[in-house]
Length: 204
Image (cartoon, rainbow, N blue to C red):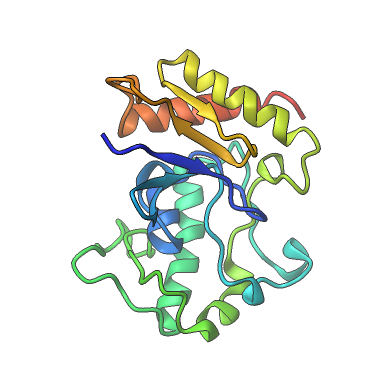
């Protein structure tokens, strides 16, 4: 099994990242992203558009705000709107991977991850969802301690993982036959969501 590292990407955070969020903005299901050599990368934090494309002021510039208590459908709709905007402004589809959303809302789009054309990300910056403030290290003063509690919550559910030394994410323990503890797919999504709500949702 490939050793998987779950990392935090500064500036944007996301709870149990949906497949649509990452298929449109840089990854795969359960927050997984093939972003580094040698293993899957996943995180509570979604990859962002190019820095120059993100307007200052966030919500003040009309960006939609994600919430911890949002349903999957609500979040998918917001990411789908962003995906459609990027595609309409020139971001190419990943051939063979994109499927139409259930209501043509962009949730099935899998987009090219090159970051080009940059003009598309600038044009769509006001549609890029803002992540819940509880999951933003810059807005939540308790983020680091809660992150460690989140990792312990996942360990309590059977995952053999530990926080990275710099606090930027977690990685699987070495030398373990099943470091995922049998959690994958929907079961992993459920564990991540429940731990996110238990740790980040309860301490406001």
